[in-house]
Length: 166
Image 1: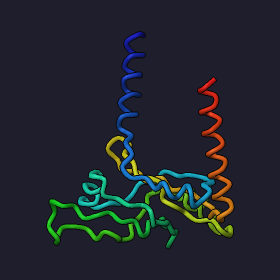
Image 2: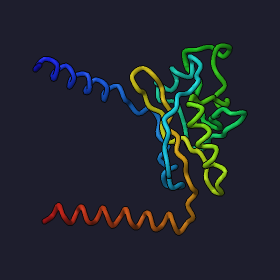
Image 3: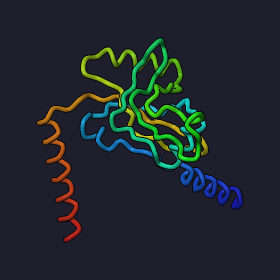
Image 4: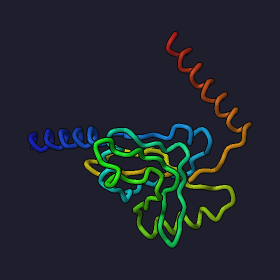
């Protein structure tokens, strides 16, 4: 029995190590209030995989659309792989297909019909050997909402530092 416990802990530790953040869209959580998240796969070319693993992805201006029943990732820049020739390299800003279940796509489509909601790529990470993209259903924040959020975060930070002092 004791041997199984150690093996399970080791396997869990290995899984956590395998989940590595490759690219993050930090500005998305500032610009949008994230209501729901979904982890999807991405249909990538070989040079794109190598470039993402090298940290050459930029999610800042990216967004997702549902076209012809498929989730698509637009305006995400994945730089060309340096060791590949021009002929075999990929186009940096091409539209990439996201892999999700039909039920998930239909649910997102219903929510996107609500005014003011959009799909934003939040991060690209490794899950085992698979590259996954986390997308968020977000509602755009107005300037006063952003200021309120900044104030709330600063208040929490001040509270934590005050509690550490005492």
